[in-house]
Image 1 (tube, one colour):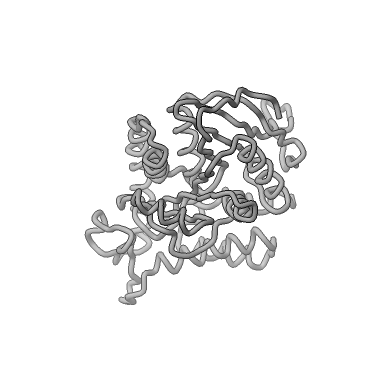
Image 2 (cartoon, rainbow, N blue to C red):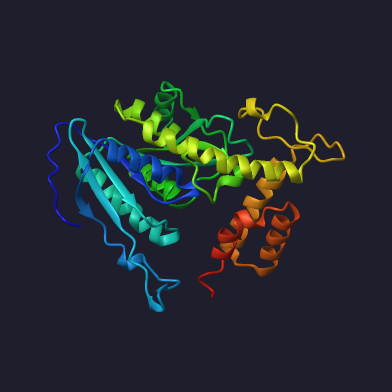
Length: 317
């Protein structure tokens, strides 16, 4: 890591982000960082963590992709530090990177670290994204509720978001992950509406004045894409209930089977699909992969998840 000018008037808040579902967290953090015009002061060498799984071909010439970047940026008045990475990690490598981020946090005496992520939920894109928090201290969680951020009810936070929260707790560093709900089917797509809500939440917490007009325009532009996707889902589930444009988290994007079953089919289906993706990613079990493929085909949505499905076995290939 290179040296930078870290002469803060007050201990800076720290934000950390990396790729994830819908790139919701990374998009939000990057937007805030650009909005406050933070400057680079150090880089984290990702070479030891990077194992190429493919080559890039341009006009017949093959070469390895560029090594992912991870960097630290600073902003003064208000005093902020950002860590951003273009690479998501798991296992021991995630622990190593999280410890490197926390080492910088200790050196700059950051009182708190915020990460951000998506919270997949069976909802329509027309419903507002709600913001939740998972913190490693109860007092911290109560303070976040004063900003209208609800505690995450239950579930798991995987990857670097989860690892950093856990390690920070063991080192007595306060950390929280801010999550925005996104439609379950959108986990492999960009979802700027979720990023927008995280930007608003973090701006309140850090008392920042961030112009959100650009991402609001991006959100409107993506609405057409998500309308097309949901129209296709309506064709698969012809008895979808009316008035879905007014549905919120308590009444999610709800479709019913033609037989009149009152069970919320998309919630059941999407939860099963996400569970199968996790199981196949962890075990590389071909039989479970076939089961996942059959489930996606059954509901006519394989093409929406095709890249994510094929990525499961890139390393083996």
